[in-house]
Length: 199
Image (tube, rainbow, N blue to C red; front, side):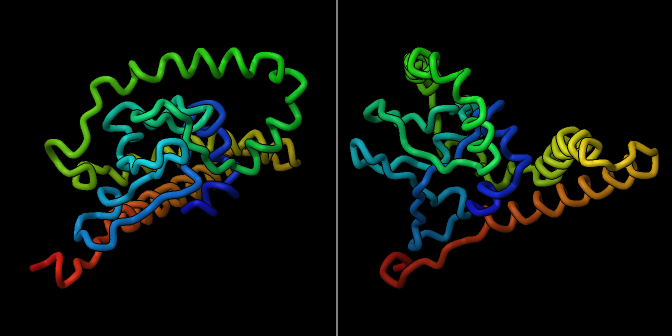
C-alpha cells in the first residue's frame, strides 16, 4: 500500500491538493481479530504515544488538509509522512516559488489543527470497515485518474479521439474498482487472536 502511494503519479493530487498523507510508520495489533483499519496505530515521534490510525479518517473529517504531516492530538507535534515521488518532483521544481511562504503557511496550518480534532470520536457506532464503500472509493479514484491523466497522455502525443477517451474511461474505471476492492480486502483483513487473548 505504501509503495503504491509513493509510486502512483495520480496520488500527487491527493497529497498536494487534498492534503491526504500516509505516516512513515504504522503499527498493527496482531492480537486483535478486528479488521485491519481498526487495529492500526501510528506512533508519535515527539511524545511517543500511539495514536489510533482512524484519527485521520474521512469519517472524522480529518483524512485531508494534512499538507505538513499528521497532527498529534496528544502533544501537538507533526508526525512525519511518506512522500509521493511525483509530489516530491513537483515540490522540488517549484521550490523557488513556495519556499518564501512555507513557514508562515505551516504556522497557520498548525494553529488550526486543535479545532479540527476537538470533537474527535473514534470507534463509536458502526464499524468503519462495515461502512467502507469500496465501489465509491474505486469510482472516485478512477474518475480523478481519468481527469488528471487524459491531458497528460494528450501531451505525450496520444490523439484526443472519441475511441481513446472511451478506452481511457473504461481502463481507469476498471482500475479504480480493482483498487477499491483491493483496499477493502486489505483494510478488512482480520488478525489472529493469541491464545491468551482469546481466553
